[in-house]
Image 1 (cartoon, helix red, strand yellow):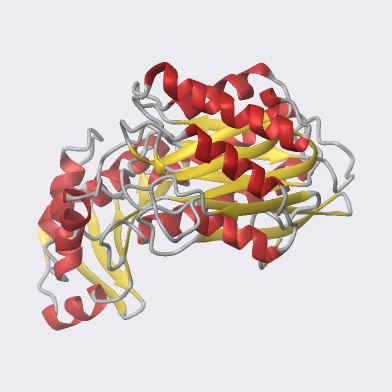
Image 2 (cartoon, one colour):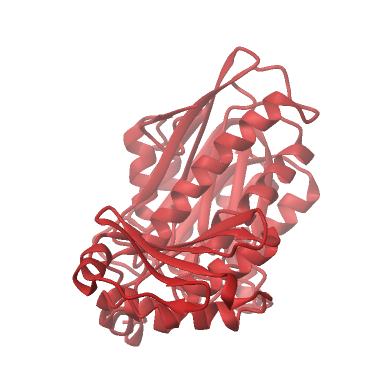
Length: 407
């Protein structure tokens, strides 16, 4: 596998476009389109929040139908959540506008929205945006990057990646883009994400691979404990690499899963580190746990604790906060088995060993925690399983951003 430059347009047959539709933002792009020359097998995962945006329900219907997907249209600024029948009608109008402009069936058009909940989308602006983007679709790297920027809300950086890998001697490409900065918490994939590949693969295998990879990537990030109404991750495979179609598990399937994990992990870490108001990526790695689920539960509890996040921001090696979060996580363990370390590019420091606090160099602790990426490593000494979760520090700016989000 090789990481290459680019994103959603890296794979054969995919193009993208964006435009200034003035949905909510002014003087910036706020709509994006991803298009495949040929219909795609598709897979998706969606929010577990009972309150689902209209676009989530629209896309769930497409994925469940088994029909191909060919186009995705995304808007930022307004989430189209808690919008009733009018919200569903906006999805339908967008899809029909694509059908008119590009000649693809409306039921092969996915839609996604991100932004303020409870506001209605201006349908006329959506339709105009579709018309404009249909005329400017391009397969260039620049077009993919521009699309990744158009879907941002409070994100400070765009998030995209592409890789190539070999399937039985055929070069295959997988690319993707995502957005997410706030209302991020594990329970699906906590974001908007769009992945494109020219791999030829059976739909059921595609869905199985995506559902499995999500567990240890997007489901392992948290920013603020809030699971969004709009979480959507779509994976489109158009088969244009012309590899022998994957219809069963084996070495080629495993290679694809490795590439998919790499891409999703990259995007997940980018989202966690770009949390609203964040100054650093906060990673928790739990090793030698009794079970995989225990390792996941413990690592998520550590990065999800507001007190832990505040300690990371303040460069305070207050290890009791991290142990406390582990203790209420629901996982059962003996604290006398636990060792806890702080790690970063500046070094490694052990602060807790088998139920007992250790004397440590406070200046070294501060130096370690001042880095842009800080890891809390916990060795459970109870088994062989491990998991890693990602979050960010909790800063004053998080409150500032969300106190006046609608304005």
